[in-house]
Image 1 (cartoon, one colour):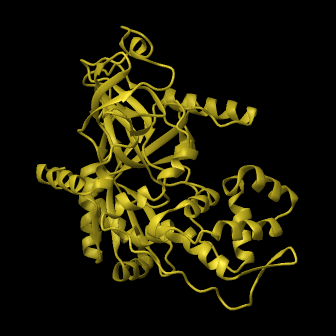
Image 2: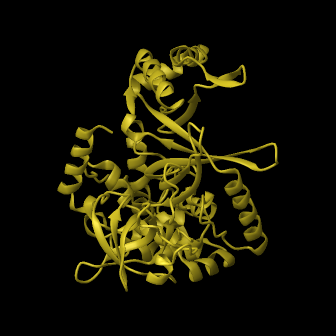
Length: 451
């Protein structure tokens, strides 16, 4: 990012009170460990660069973080970091938090690299290495280098630039029905005299366009309607030992019927919020975005009439968040509301730890810390409408469902066959990325980041 770009980004944060607030999950570069608090510089999120003081939380304290060669030592001289969950404003300028633990306590200078605010996805395509360990990847979108294009020529040029810079690009667009298209393309290469040689970026970009064949007409249709966002993409392989441990922990947790506790790269953090979580969030919104006060009660009464005994019992004990996506999709359909299908996994904002040993052009991703709830679509221009629809969908679904409901003789029914009135769409703030992600802020409480 250029110095001017950094200046503008900093200026925008300062002018937006919501964006500049120190809150949520963050990584802190420690500067001083006091008896009850740690002082450090925020590394990740909108408040990056801000010095704060935070009370210890969890099971560790000053003695643990300062013990030389201890398991939880944080080496201040080498830039040791902490991961802190649920940061909130406390008293007298000192922040509280839900949980604090070492992130990269003793960095290896020149080998370890902390990558803050990485918008990335997680890929497990079932491949394994020659030692039968899973081959996992984390792909980071280089958001500052996004190019939005509306012609084939510009598309090819943007792909070429992405290939030259990072070796890969991800294309995002929307079809006529509003479905998001997302596809990665790679520069690739081959071994020549024992060395890896990448393909020529310009030639590979041209080959990519040519590979569309007769399908270029479909590509042109998307380009004319809304265009594609072409985002250079930086791929990190998950360290083989880390990948092996991830697989083992998931298998062990599955056998016990519990959620795996993974403090390195946790695949569970790339799972999108369920419909039940999104529904509960919509019902809990306040201010201008709030639904009528009786909306939740009306929907609950209708669901109790709709669901079978097992579903009703689950709802009573766990609320909307305890119900499956399939159950809630069918429930809304029963009152004339069709919910759009979204990917179950998506793009997460994480602080990554890269381990780059001598001779490596790109290191392994060995640890990640989730900062925001995962979304099915990233904050790129071509996905703006889809993201807007995703974040307002459950509010509009609640309004439409209540408008079409009549609870009669213990059965939830539509008033008649006419379509429920379409709910008005709220205008979102101009700073779309921050506003859209903040909209699901409280959902993070149900996505515990165990470590």
